[in-house]
Length: 258
Image (cartoon, rainbow, N blue to C red; front, side):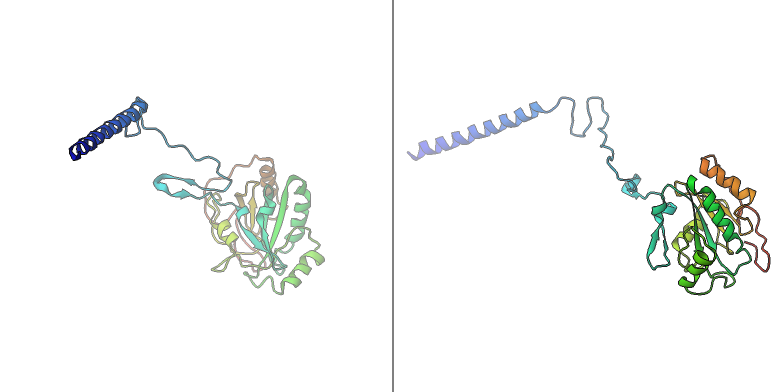
């Protein structure tokens, strides 16, 4: 009796092994003929990995070495401090052409405030926005509190363009925006701001396209010609040159070169 049970057990094991081997062979038979274990097809070419899709604007892509490449920054990625203590995100002006100017009411170039207001009014329908950044960095040209500064420009000078809080535009504590403006490689006249009423022109894509020294007036032929070209999409940045900006840089009434 025990002998028969042993024989039956061994016979069952043999049958089970045979069935298992047959199932594995059947699975292999179902694999595509043009696929091997390396992931290569019948042509020998390795199958390409799917490309990244559906990236939201501003998201980086994965470059070589598996590192994510960061999108290039533009002016709209920064913000300025508002006179009310709140931040002013420049993305609010996305699609606009910006002229960013560091103001100082006690500077000999203060007469440019009226010209900046006229420029803002003349070109606002074409998308220009002048932004004033009061600064006390040069010659103590902008003393007082933010409330006093706002009164000077908004009430006394009657400007309609935005004037933000007094800020540092040079040195270790300069605004991050000015760190970007003065190091922007697209503008050949890069480098630190040296005096009041230095002007940065930003196109509708948020790129710095021109820089003007203090002695280039807002209503000068050079400024108007450049502005017209930028607004019409005809402007071509000039080749790299030295620091400073269009128009040289000689000051008057004690203002040093820019």
